[in-house]
Length: 435
Image 1 (cartoon, rainbow, N blue to C red):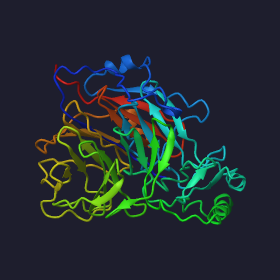
Image 2 (image 1 turned 120 degrees about the horizontal axis):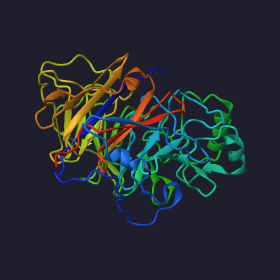
Image 3 (image 1 turned 90 degrees about the vertical axis):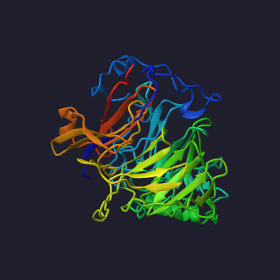
């Protein structure tokens, strides 16, 4: 599948005396499961990150593999890696090649976590074992729980094809509850159009359906609880709930303690504690295209930036390239473009990050041998040209994924071929804050 390298990065203001170094933020209690003990001690690469100059890129090389499950794979239309500040790392999820089954027989519905301090991969879920799926259902190792959710023999949710395609912008991290949130829209058994006629899942699902459980979780999100090391899923409640799987934009809003969900002109909020959904009913113009777009949360101004979206119609008169959702005001706006305005690309073309050090949205583009870096000022709407990425990135056609860490003021960019596990992690700093 075609891949395009086009990186988006965003930057924001902090105190002048900010120290740029790896930190180890505290956690509320000791964790369990694959992410227990995070954040760990910084590795040898920490000194290289600290020494990054303005506009500098460094190649950190391939992250160390998970001891059992190997490396995280590249996946197209999956640029967003939700960052967890309490863990110092980010999640990699979503398909690459549609319906891809790895050489070991595991379906690529896997979930990996990049440990920033350890420069290593940690496997959260290795994917569905297609070779033993039917046998596990027959033995009761996989079954339907009372909510109609596929579960293990202890009744704990199993995320079969939890994202039934590319991840776009449809996953996020809730630091208040230490939960990775993903997979809105799927039924309890899971569904994947590109493998649903294969014998392993077709016959396995027949056995599961025969158990006669009503699907009460249809459309609701999955959670991976980083403290317990377990997956969670609950029936969806509220006056207005999300549609089934779509090109949605999903972010956690720390000031509202809520999930933000935008798709097709509709803005929904979900209380993270009660998990009840409702229509936010905001005022103002919303992005016109699909939600396959660049997006990021601005923690300084408590607002979200979204692009026009892929497949958007021709621009209206005076329509700007940036749409803004103000969380406190519960309102959308669309400022007109300034001279030489750039844009936020769709999810296969770049990363969109808010960087708490320089208060800019930086677009780094690399496509067909052409590349450049541009910075957007959220305060004025002005754009500036800001250099270019390394030639090696400009010429690459690998899938691109990434996140920004405010603790180190560095943008991490993982590049790997579509469904390929031979990837490399790069680090980039737009600017050091003035001291």
